[in-house]
Length: 284
Image 1 (cartoon, helix red, strand yellow):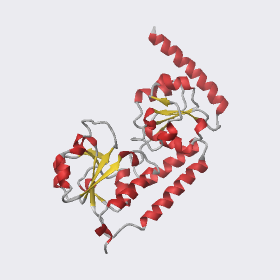
Image 2: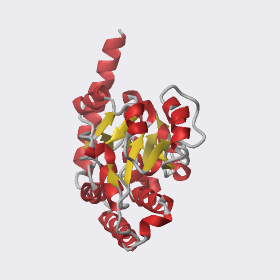
Image 3: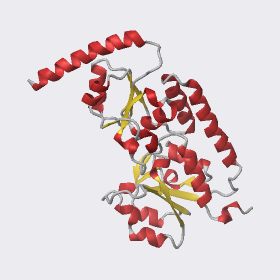
């Protein structure tokens, strides 16, 4: 009985989207729903608030999201198909990590779903901003946002020193970030050599605490969540070994939200890293 009810809802939803799609083809989306924290941020930055029907509950957490204040004025969703159907969106944006079953069901009923991947560098980040802005019917806002990012990056480029300290990123559960990732380019842009990349780690991978302790890094970057609840995943970031490492290398705590998603906040991450380097780095 329950399964029959769900099928009926899905058939009705499919018919509704056919009608909505025919009426609104080519028009600016008026009821946008985002099902991913990173698409949340781009939608909140680029779309008019009145056109946003819902973002995820994650977007409302200031410890993890950059647009929490604006997000709190918008209805939140938990990524459930029933929530999306009830909102009658004319655009649903999802990410690579949005629950696959949810995406599949929405596509099955004909929902207007657009999926965005994970940018691996700054060029892909710019392209994604432009793509999202065009999709939302706000191309000028996308171009302006990219121009502002580039202006800030150009201003920071003059601060890079001649030497390149080696840095390694440590994330919860012992993960680090290697070559072929946005974080790798962020480190390079800030003037660092990514030790994880030198160790042969591609994209995201785990690294032993012993490797971190015995490595040749000048700077250890801890990917933190300020005021976040205690968790087993974060225990490694508070290991006594790391405290002792502070005697021979610089430890920098960088809020995870600055580079979890590809957007203007990555420039804040670059600036924070530049501010944290030892003064000797800029000595000829």
